[in-house]
Structure formats: C-alpha cells, structure tokens
Image (cartoon, rainbow, N blue to C red; front, side):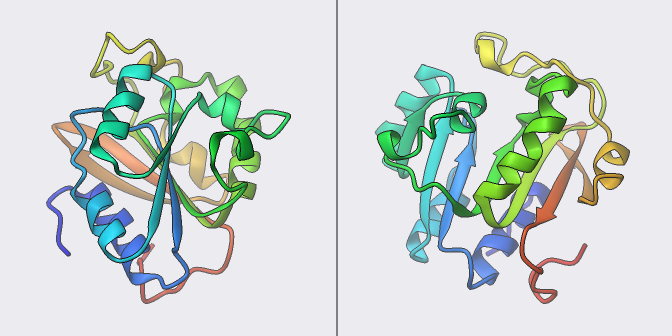
Length: 189
C-alpha cells in the first residue's frame, strides 16, 4: 500500500510488513487525520486502539468505529495505577504511534516519560513531530498546545532512528525506537 505522506508510509511499512505487529496503539487522532492506514491495518487483522485526550476527537474516533478508544492523556496512560485494564486496553502493544504529540509536553516531562512509553511498546515506538517551532494546527484543542521545541539531534543522542520529512509545508521528523531488533527488510533507517 502506497501513501503520499512519508510519515504515513513509514508507519504503514512498519505495521503492514512486520509480522510481529498485531496490536497498535495510536496516541492522538484528530478529525482531519487520514484514516486510510488505520482501515488498512484493520483489514489485515491488526487490532488498533486509541488514546485521545480531547473529548470531541475521542467521540469522532468512536463514531468511525476504528477501534477501542480510551479518553485520557498520555500522562494518564503512563500513570499509576495502570489505567489500561479499566479502559479496555492491554498493558502492552506491539507498535505505539504518537502522531504529532511529543511537542505538546514540556521537555522536563517528555524525556523522563519516554522510557516508560518504550516499555509498553513490544516492538517499536514511533513518534512524529514538527522540527523546531511550528504553530499549532487546531487551537481549539487545549491538549494541542506546543510546550517544547524539538529537533532530531535530541532523539539521535538517545539512540532513536530519525527520519526527516516535509509534511503539509512544515518540516517534521519521525523518531523510532525499536524495543526488539528491527526486521531490516521492513524499514530502512
């Protein structure tokens, strides 16, 4: 399956070509997001669940019937006690996709939180974000306020694979951390 958006293509290649990807967690999905990939994953038998902080977006995902939806923030998802069971989510997923969300956390929150998120990713964690400063796209969503300015180098020094992109006229990048050895035939670094 081919996508014009390089970030979407990367996730598609990882999720559809790697036989280990059976359960995907998608963190954050706005109504403007293209759901073609998520529908393709479901068609291939991959289960998809969502964590969405903004109630109107969570309602939108529920109406589309794309998968289980937990209305909570990423902070709640990683909280103690573990909220997964009460929200119908397993404690671990094969692939976690955090689409344009890391910049909504302060760096003081983000860096200590990432190892805990990696622990929940059985195979890989994929995060997509603008490179540097970029105005927020949906100012009505209070969870979409950009609190940090992130660059690829900050992830490279933490042993992430980094793939730069141009997405909707913004420079952005994807940071990938494999928690199990990656299948080289799936996604070149």
